[in-house]
Length: 71
Length: 417
Ligand code: SF4
Ligand code: SF4
Image (tube, rainbow over all chains, first blue to last red; front, side):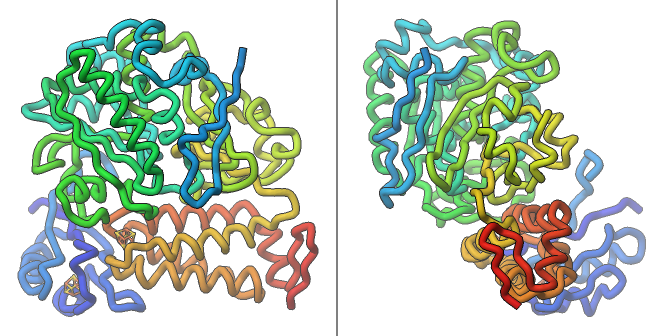
């Protein structure tokens, strides 16, 4: 399965932290409660990531294809 | 003859900074003849009308970069926007308080910029042009309106709309400009796609600052070979610089790429640390300056970036750490406060830096906060602030150590612990 990036819409994110609960493998919270996304998602984690995208109370998460150029 | 004119009409409302400007080799040639269309046309003839492919090719030939700070290759942007119903956006509002080159260019040579915008609009097959002017310089808007009336009378058929940018630092970020155009608050939002692909009302949008359009107009007029009459083989052309933009004696100057920094700064300034690229820029030690040229490649090799051409030599007697802490205080106040990591992280960084600089606090906390804000906002404001702070830590390790011992080595030799 292909790799996706989990991106945060920062103005929309209100530090509810639901994403970190659902996806502890890739998301931790900073000292103010905002998510730190550690790596791209793929495989089983991608399904969980899709759940997190739906579960975020402010719809602040999006899965995007990685950009064509190396980051 | 090099004449120096004070740009009286661009005087800031706060009565502060009136940059001096001298005639330059390309964009600022002929400014002593005034900003009117008649003298402009007498000198240069009608605005050029290249086709999109030709303009893309020329921009690629001379490796033209956007002059807003990021230095993105313009040919790529242009090619991406060269699709159906594109929109052209000229940003003449500089959010950075130490940059005055776009306002100065627009004041002294509005038709040089507008020729570029007209050439791009023609190449993209659109008539829709938006020009963003700084609300804190009402006289600039009057100059642009007058220039547009002159062009309309001369038969130019562009649909131009003016917009007043808010006087905050992040107002010039691409997404903030698109918000302004859409009638919303002039603040950044998250971009899911580049604006060249999906910008104003979802249409491909060619957005750049006034200087970039002026270069495009000049390039369209003189061609790649003519453009390369200035600069080096690797970096053809010229660039606008703002010197001491927030201090004494601010100056806007156009120089060819490859010009030694020693020709731009005074001897005394060459002996001082230099903040290059503005408040989101990078510090260089004075020992790194000799031999350095105004060149993207040289400057990148020195671990910095020319950004939007802002050069801030440290004033004599100042400590670079004290100066950085003051800038970060300002930058923290300019966070639009929308994104959690920026809203929380920048004030925390300002506090940690004050602690380091004035109370000998730990550098580790400052480093940690740099990491916590980078790439975690809708715009690059936190990234730029972190870059400034990180460069302070890497360039001035001795000063950081002495502050930890309570000694500041500015001329004032302040001992605070
Ligand atoms: S669940 Fe949504 S709002 Fe909450 S921290 Fe995660 S991204 Fe932010
Ligand atoms: S990153 Fe900071 S300055 Fe940029 S939009 Fe978010 S809160 Fe505003």
